[in-house]
Length: 301
Image (cartoon, rainbow, N blue to C red; front, side, top):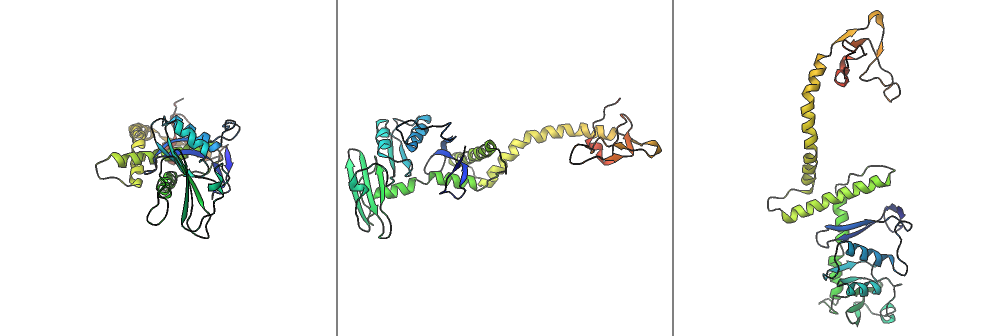
């Protein structure tokens, strides 16, 4: 399940396929990638295309004319055509090694120049922003072949404004991360999912609350307090009875200077080791330090 991704800062980790709302970063759906053995890609299909179809199908997004924005790992001509048949639009950057017409793939363009190529609803674009930079290639089934006042294609600006949903979600999650060092992969996944659930809850809270809104930190603190409230109440109900029992415990000294293991703090096989005392509980006769009365459960013999 652990993946090696050399382009990432943390090169080893668990890969998540995430479908986000582009403006707020709300996580609509995600899939934990389990590796080629347990999560194989169907024959004749790119992994990126398979992931986009799986996420969209799981959320019942097809035939509702949603607009999916993807990066170069997912975008392909075959994916765009398939999504069009399913009533879904696509815009994304294209890798140079993907199948595309040679007029776009091998196009020679000057600085701040754009070249478009259309076939039906499929629109391809190649644009070079500066002389020292490589051309960028995009594919869209929803945008038009239009330029802004600065000569940049409008579909590039649209792509830049919509692609940041996943990065925004990761940024929100990492703000108050509470990861724990562990060798158990499933624990890392569970903690990460809990963080994303809390982030989603805060996004919904901001969108639907008319009252003065809490900060993200205050919102998290309120969740922790509410979840712990039931435990704290039950503890307070148990505490008086336990204090009453501890108050009834009386101690006496062991005759002849003998010692016994303390029933409250002695642990021969644990980290604390063996702890000896010269006092015992009057009722049960077990060894007991005065300071350990709160840990003693007295069972009368």
